[in-house]
Length: 71
Image (tube, rainbow, N blue to C red; front, top):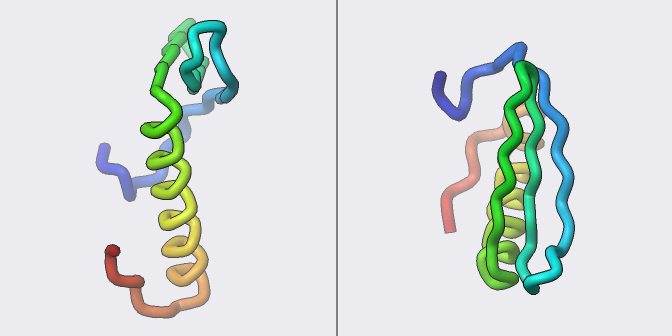
């Protein structure tokens, strides 16, 4: 499955700081899958920027606009 393919898999996501000064993205999926992903604050900010860019691109695609260029 590619990143742009729809999936029927359901998952829960939680995001928060750890006691070690990291940012944790915790994913829990069907079938008992638990995936804790820890990032330093700078990496977390880069991920946030990528999420914002993807949201902007998704909005543009939903409106039928051409795909925005990568920065």
